[in-house]
Length: 363
Ligand SMILES: *Cc1c(COP(=O)(O)O)cnc(C)c1O
Image 1 (tube, rainbow, N blue to C red):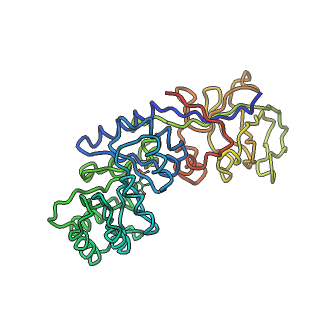
Image 2: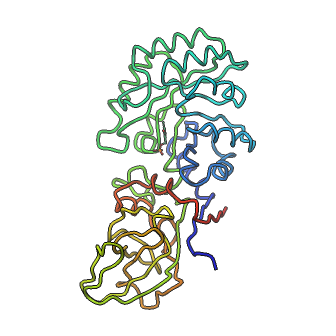
Image 3: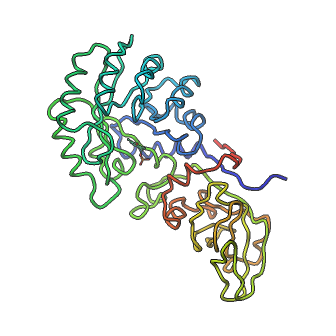
């Protein structure tokens, strides 16, 4: 009856992946990064699944923090960009949110807000990413102002690595961070998924994994999700809704960008960019059907993708399940493989899951 596409969300996989984090950095506390609606997986169900195994949650969106507190989540919540306006600060106090302070007006506004509780704060240091964070001279001034204020709890130093998943690694930024932190012996938080997996020795007191919790590799060209023992949380699957025979010379889809060189059997899958499948995925992007890997053909439409059934058994037919990404056993297809073929990253695939796709949750 219903269109056969669905996203299956496996919360036991999310908890498993958090355990993988703990195996790599046993001494560190874990901020589970649930910004962007838990990377497209749904903030509240993801937070509920993690609430008894994580040490805290990390967000960008104030609405998300309100929703977590309304749902009874009592762990610390770290706000990665801090407040955007001074008038948000009373809410930081009420909800006991930990702000990341990356610029001086935030430091001054927090001190001037005279909140009735001592809020722990994160001070973000720019060590080479050059997006947010204090440089060396501003950092000393920010620290001095905070040290003199009485509405401030603990101060943690934080930075974010630009190349933790690249050949360059973290050495240079780590060196700058250590030089800036000096001998102040404040707690530190540095590592995202890539950094905690590759450089666990630099994990610091609190790690901030995002993508690995959702079961994708932060560096798929170096190590696959399977090699890292990560399990997919999101499975995007649909079915073949048509099967047809092409003759040599027949073109497929908009623009006819794929032309059959010889007679071939193709399938049509009920999934397109209107569901969040990447429109720029070229011919050859992997899909999993009948326990075998095959490929897309031609352009992705809003509602449909055409796939090559050439190498598959003739029993594969209308109604058969197609994994677009995720899945398990012989229907597993790494989101990283799809993302790489489409010139993007699994982060974007997950975040882009469209609202029209029905969600099935399994525990
Ligand atoms: C999003 C984000 C993370 C999580 O990064 P992953 O690559 O998903 O592990 C960690 N820290 C900061 C500052 C972030 O913005």
